[in-house]
Length: 356
Image 1 (spheres, rainbow, N blue to C red):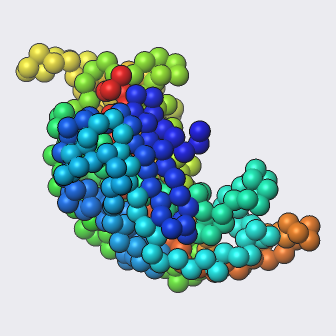
Image 2 (image 1 turned 60 degrees about the horizontal axis):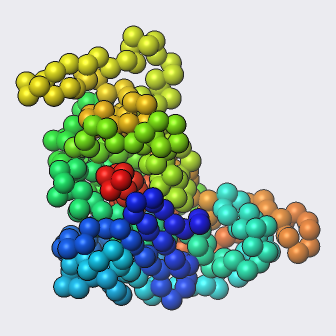
Image 3 (image 1 turned 90 degrees about the vertical axis):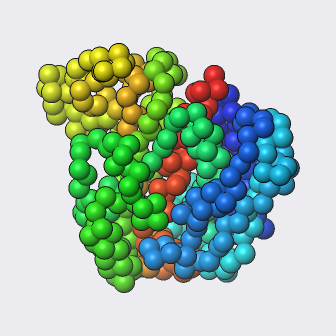
């Protein structure tokens, strides 16, 4: 099913952007684990709407556990949680059954579901559905931290503006210094990112960008060849985030322009007798299996398709070409709010592999 992820753990996401609530049912998490609910809510706030670079929709994204968690402790193998939707303006979307938004799922959803889909705010295709993903992913991240595995992400670029990194591949000590509220290495990058996003918004347009994610402490030997590779498992979860259009591991597409002598990572034994590599162009994964080096990947996000400019579209009812002017409140750039979503996708993927 499209809304279910995992093999050894299972998460099932439900709800629509303008429905009464959105939520998640989770199976297979460690029974007896005590969830730090305050820490979880702080993590959720990083994705919540209403910030400087986001939609003006106001949602607290307060997590409510319905079952399976008592006194913050996971009782057994299943628990469920919801977030109530409190600030909806559904009338802004009434014309989208007839005139689909360019770059959005309106047209393809209409072809698949024949009008039974909920178009309000994007319905089940909305980025709002990443909030339940972050509930499950935020808890999975806490569990992994107890096992010595840490996951961090930061904004690498927005549009043509970049945040230069101190090293080619991030070190744990570097990632820990980053302020999660605006995760960049350089303070001036935050100012530049805010400016280009605001410029795009004022012009009735939007921007995309790239998020860099690193997973530290993954033991050697997770994953497998062919269809059981870690790259595929992580990518499946990451591509569940709306607006994701590309994922690359290690040197990625850049590696295709190198010689093998440049791209290969030489092995060595460190002072503790552990096998390491001098570089990490393989992104911590060889043959689909973890090498013990940090897992490193980049995620590309397209510009938000809902923009204020008049665009070309069609009338499905009249079967003719028309123009569309989109109403409603939309993110001029989803990248900042997508950082916890990428962390969540990585956490769920790695946790699923560890539970194997």
